[in-house]
Image 1: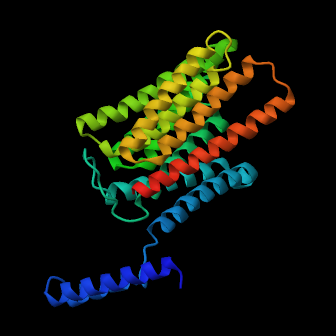
Image 2 (image 1 turned 180 degrees about the vertical axis):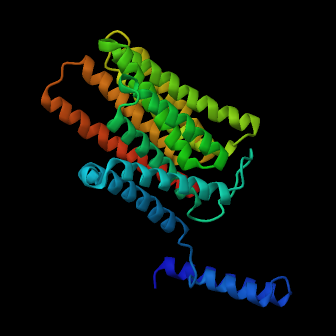
Image 3 (image 1 turned 180 degrees about the horizontal axis):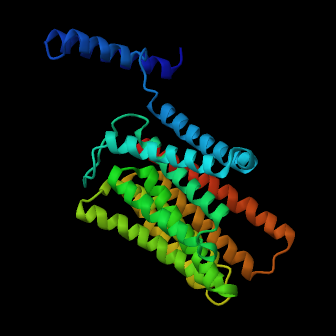
Length: 328
């Protein structure tokens, strides 16, 4: 018998003794003790995350299938029938959430059931499909179609805060970011790359600042991880995109290293490995682009560079992950 199994049996025996003592002292009732014994012996286990993953995958498959159905059979089904079906499905989702949700509160609001968050997400995706179909079929906004993105993003944001839904908050922030990118590319013509990079930096910083402000105000503070994960990735992506610039590359590289230091410090404070991963990967990417862009490298040199640095990177990440695991 290996050491792991022996240790597991020891823990199980100690837990059984503790449950017996608590039941004998009348601290736990008979049913409570029996339930805890079944949980600890793994006769009962949670499928919470598996169920959520299935619901999420099901919604993605459903909306993708709906898109394919519209694309292939809209002529035979009829435009009005399709519009009515999407609108009814969308309305049904929001009516369900309005009837079962608890309304707006500043604190975290537990979902009334496992499907609640995903039904709201489905309603938002159906709303996006409805807007896309209306624009594709009737061209209501024509050249100004990007305003659909802004309207959708703002509506999703409102829904996320009212129904306390982090999935929809992610959808709202990415939709607003997409609108900003599309708007920038349409307005700035051939100079859109620099403007887009600047707007991405501003948007990422704004998303992070908004999350921090909510924590300071104790208002939807549990939304902070969504703001940070999205904001810091946008910020890093914009900085990495600028490292290749001959005139401003060094400035962008300094920005990456400073942001990476901040992300690493935050990961240490919150014990969140993801932010350390962002810091290491984006810093490596920025340094690599800067070094390769400014040197005269032969193919062998590039291969040697990646061989050495990638090995060091993977070793460092494994070591950092073990340190995080051991500290938990």
